[in-house]
Length: 315
Ligand SMILES: Nc1ncnc2c1ncn2[C@@H]1O[C@H](COP(=O)(O)OP(=O)(O)OP(=O)(O)O)[C@@H](O)[C@H]1O
Image 1: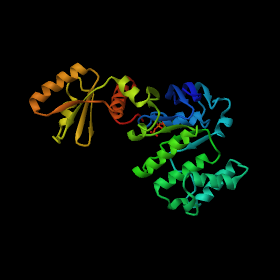
Image 2: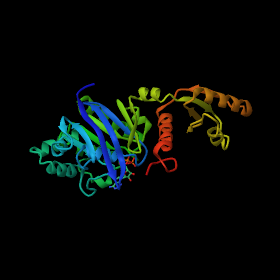
Image 3: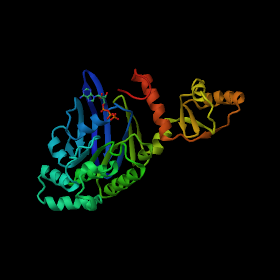
Image 4: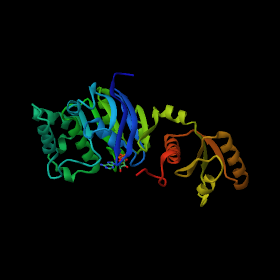
C-alpha cells in the first residue's frame, strides 16, 4: 500500500452513553478511493466529521495526512475538502460568486486564479454566472465539489455526494473523482449505491458503528462465504416469503425479475432449495454473490448480534 492518508485506530463516539461509532479502525492509502458503506444511521457521517476535526472523538488515535488527528485538527482542516450531505452553498449567488466566497473563507492569496482553476477543473466556466439555486442536482454537486477543491486539498471526504443525482451526472462525477485520485488526492466517500461501491478501490462496510467488512469488492464477497442461488422469471406472489422461511435461507433479494436466495450454509441451502424445487417446479441456478447480497447478509447478522430494530436501518 502507498503511504497512508488516513490511519486511525479505535475511533469511538458516544451519544447518551451509546457508541454510535465503536472502535473503528480505518486505513486509506494515498491516492486511493475508499467507499464507506452502511445502512442509515450506522455512523458514517459521524466518522467523517471526526476525521476532519469537526467533532471530538471520545477515543481513538492516529493520523490524517501524517498529522495527529486529535491534536492537529486545525492543520488537517486546511488540507481537507469536506462535502456535506446537504448542499451548503448560497442559492442566490452565482457559481463564480459562491466559489469566490469560499476562496475568501480560506483566505487564498490569488483568489481569482483559484476560482478560475476550480471553474475549469469542473467544467463550470460556461455557467459561471448562473445562480446556484437554479442549477439541477448534478450541477449543484459539481459546484459543491469545485468548492471543496478550491484550496487544493490532499484529502476529500465526501458524504453521499451523489444522493438524488441522475445516472449520467453520477457517472461524470465519478469520472472526476478518478481523475483527482490519479493526481494523488485521497478520497473517502460514503454512498448507498452499489454501482458506486464497485468504482472504489477499497471498501469499508459499517453497521451499528462497527466495521463489519473491508477490502476490495472481490475480497469482501469472498470473505462473506455466501452461497447464492438465482431464481429467474417468476412473479409468483409471496414466493420471497416462502423462500425466506426455508432452513438455511438467510436472505432473499430481488434484482429485477431475478430473486437471489442466499445463505451461509451451502449444503443446507442446497438441500432446502432442492426440496422446494420439487414441489414448485421453479428453476434455480447457482450464482455468484454480489456486494448487495453480502451487505444485506451482513446487516441481518448485525441485527441479530447487536441490533434491536426492524430491517432497513439502525436509527
Ligand atoms: N448529535 C447527535 N446526538 C445524538 N445522536 C446522534 C447525533 N449525531 C448522530 N447521532 C446518531 O448517531 C448515529 C449515527 O449517525 P450518522 O449520521 O453518523 O449515520 P450515517 O451512517 O451517516 O447515516 P446516513 O446514511 O443516514 O447518513 C445515528 O443513530 C444518529 O441518530
